[in-house]
Length: 364
Length: 217
Image (cartoon, rainbow over all chains, first blue to last red; front, side, top):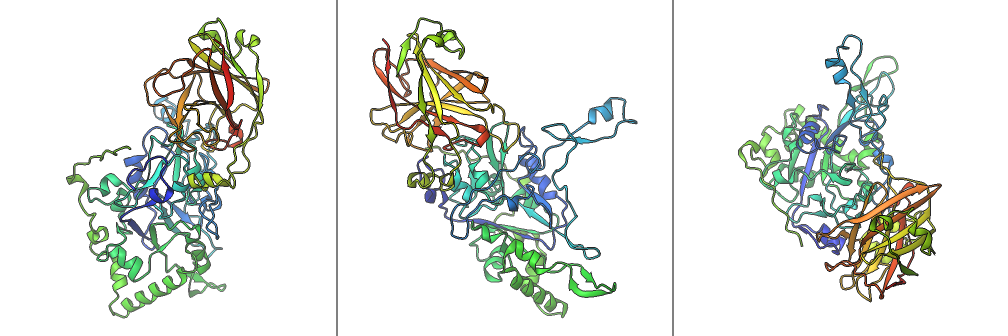
């Protein structure tokens, strides 16, 4: 549905003709935060949005972003029943630290006072912030391990945020399934934040309304991939229509089945998929010798991706072994992504050559 | 209940501790949690809010109402802690509303319908001097009135564990909002939100069906 009347059913609000999707290859993500910064500078530098990271990258194992979002609830339970969760606070969403730049740089105190952050709400020394636990990871010394987990709104097919909103402020766009939040209809009740198990909706305390990733739809409408995807220097990203059978994205999700959703047990049918990390640094044995086993245990991946991940990892290792033997592997070629533009089929236009316009929404 | 005719200025009418309110009779109304859990009508609008069970902590409101021939004021008093700032992102403020039917058949339980809408005066605790005229055509459709008019004048004070709130606006409105005629009758319903209990949207206490209110000539 493009823009439904306020009394429209949830089915109408979820209806869409096509759906876009993302794939993120966790084997390639190096945690550089270029995606985070691309999003932040484009969308969340306004007053009240400073603490938001619609696109974020955290270390796994770790608390994630917002902090401990996996323990906050939301989504649907095993019976498919709605399960409202908790709301993150300013510290959980990473805060937007203030720094004493004036004092250090212009107060003639630079040789006595050190640059230090303080929290937005109290001015105290921060005890948590965005990526506070970066690179800590898991495992026991000397077999510590971690990988990076980039996250954004999953533009779920069965979006619980949309179900939760009593004012029908949230709907899926007909042409691409992107989940958007109408600022005019939003009352700032944050029922959507409670409902989202990924905690991908943020509260703007200045406008007193919710805000979220809208998959850069003004770019998408003009054939340009979202900023986070296009700016990724690691070729971790694919973006396109999930039903485009000629696309690399379609092949990885539907043909080779090596791209899988995060936390499928939340029951929301997310549309951002991941290539799971299928290899990790070899573990040390007790005697200090190096074994053939990776440090990353399968149960860690199953916590994130469910039981299907084991088969995907086995398949990816098998495909890599083929390449190592000098044989062909279509899957490995797709993952390597020699042609950057193949990864954004239909959305490969250069933003610098387009005139960006917001298409006005016709209200009913 | 009635709306008493008083000869005071708009300013005194809009002061929750104005002398005039000592002479206007007030009436207590019990409040109950809105029936959300297990309510099929609510489930259609939000299957998540339908799961709510711990809302509705404020169980009584005292109401007085008066007009001076130009403006109508409603004075609400209820016991509860003060939450008038959203300091953190997971905090909510207190609120209150008075609802009026816009047609004889309008229903208070579901906040009207497309054919029988309602008008509410809504105040939330972090607004210092104004409230909003809200129009609703059913639960989940409440929206601020889009016609150009003066906002609801509101003044609230929290004293000794009680909120004292006055909301006030012109008797006459010919733009789809409630219109009040001295000598006639109107109907009112009341709702209170306890921000400390994370109450907002449908999570609130309310007085149930509309109550008939005579307006002094």
